[in-house]
Length: 306
Image (cartoon, rainbow, N blue to C red; front, side):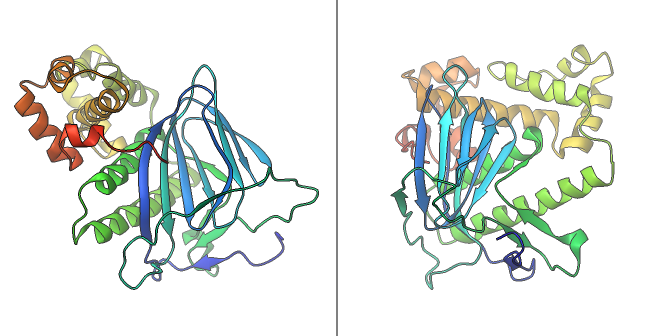
């Protein structure tokens, strides 16, 4: 199979369609599959760990792991019992395949456990780019590793936009975000291969600290306390390496925490507003809707399907 040409689509021909995007905090031991789908899917592991099987091939599913599979490719995921993973799921097609641009519906079918002896493997590869320009190609196969700090916000944005009320611009917005995601993966690949300096430990540690303190009000002086450098200097380094300001990154972590509390706790909206120190329930509702596209009460009712 691997001697055959890899299916390919050029960057210029890309007109992807996003059919579903979501975030799922798995319970201990949670699993889905073995199953197959009619679309293509990315599964991004944002936290925790577990096991993934793509056509019977086992992989450790760790933070930053991006799994890819296409139609009729048997896959199976099992969350760890003590540190279950937090996943982002994205169902899509490389080319829009309905005239209306509306979702044809997510088609998932149970499958028997893949037997590598008896079952024939699908070619689970896709090349984005022109094979005559290998430096510009992006190859997808079972799994690749991505930076959590750089890519979780991108998957979160896709999930947020999908969960918002459908508008005429929703489909092209999702397409644009997916194209940005693919381009960012190629940029990350080039950055790594050209031996450019990776995310520094100090900036990675500050990004982690932002998440740890997301229940508090942002304090610019934290940057100095966490690094022993002037806060403005660290802020410049942070933006240069992550492409966003420390404040915006911090608020994105606060938003993710708000979603976690809405989805997985019974706290009232007022209690969540107090927990996150975002002011009155009116301010919380306005802020949450502005950044997620839905009021918090509506968001709480979303399904946990991935």
